[in-house]
Image (cartoon, rainbow, N blue to C red; front, side, top):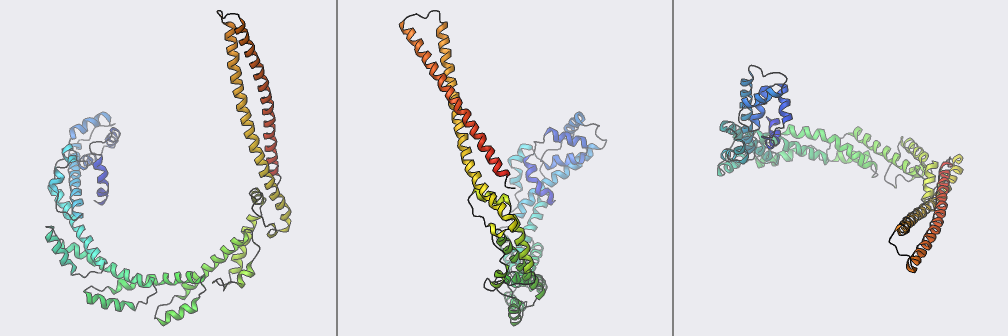
Length: 457
């Protein structure tokens, strides 16, 4: 039923809109109970004859002899489920039955959905019980006494709503257990001894709230271990250790988990020294001794695993820092490079790679400028060719015109066009020579960049 309840909103939106492909697929499966159930759940009237005619045209085999009976049974269950869900939705919201409103809804009337009052009422009763169970659980979890049930009963009467005594009581008992579990968890999380239970129990009884000692202690015992782990993690980088915490715990009667504290404390310190080593390794000298000497001032401790954690992390990051590729990129951006922290055998190569990175960036600037110049010249050459082509077409059209008069004006026009053509040809030749030079510079700078990048190794 819960699965159907989740699916019904989508199914109702699709009522009457089953695709032909879906119907054909259903026919091929040949499960007439499922076909009928789907029609009933979608709010469609039972219509075996139409379904059979459709399936006869699309299925690979004819319907079984008992298909009609199976369809009818499936449809009846689908129709029941649809109305049961409507009722459950209304009941779980704390509403009075809304059957008449549901029956007159546009979708129901549009699809001529057969009504089913008994199914709706059964669903509403189930939803109403869920509503009161949830209400009781909320009241119990918030620390309300069992007598709160009477207030809820009165509210139900005022709203003319059915009150489910059993459902509320079940929910309240579950909520009451949650209340005590939350109290135990909260106390342990805050490092409060479980002896606090006595004070909580006294206050609860005074307020008329049932006491659930087992729920409290189960939650407290489960969380107190995490309290000591969290405390160890916190203390490791705040200059505290178990000795102080143990004395504090004994003074207030708190159960102690020394092993869990120490494990978390040491794990956090190993992480600290590993992180510190990695930070130093990327461009800093090996500072382990200084870090250990200043540990107390920084609120941390040196433990047996400190040297290995720091050293391994430092070596790993130092190896990454002391790569020619890194030196090259830092040179490109003029970011300082502390080659002295690298192995002596690598230092000259790294210096060369750094300078190569600087030279590469200079060449890159020249390369970009050469590309821009070449693009500009290419555009100018293209424009000149277009103008020259247009002019030559005008000259050719003028020469071929049969009705063109031969006089001083036309002769002057011809001389002007011819002069413009010579000038354009000269200009185009100059631009193309400049373009060839620019492209050669682009190639030279590109080759220089490739060489600088390649020769860092």
